[in-house]
Length: 189
Image (cartoon, rainbow, N blue to C red; front, side):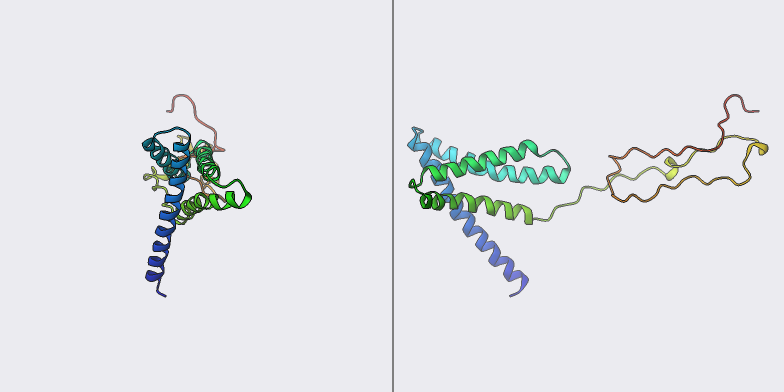
């Protein structure tokens, strides 16, 4: 089987599972809403809100992780909406272990499918940092001194060692290297 054929088969399976699991989950949330006094159109609105919110929150969680932003609130909301969907599935079931298990399958399949698709998509790396100014951030500027004040063997400016863990330049402050040479203060003749 070629890679292209395999991708097409995976897409067809993904669409079939997503369509059927989504339809069952939507229907259970709709039926539960209607059974508890909501008009028919509000039942569908509830189903759309609950099921699509879980998908949206999964996408938002992934985008925030890529951007290095906090994910706590979005993760908590994702869990809450997933549990709400699962509760609607179980509430519509026959009151037995098998009834609850079978009723939970569409919601769990739908959420698992969203998780697999979102974790399988390639993550785009962050945009490169703009061009940094020349390397003199790490060098000590030359100061005016007389010949007698200069050391016999000048010490070259310190070169920063490569970091063991790379981090974005915007997070780390510039490294300041202090010179061993005395600073000249006052009027220079």
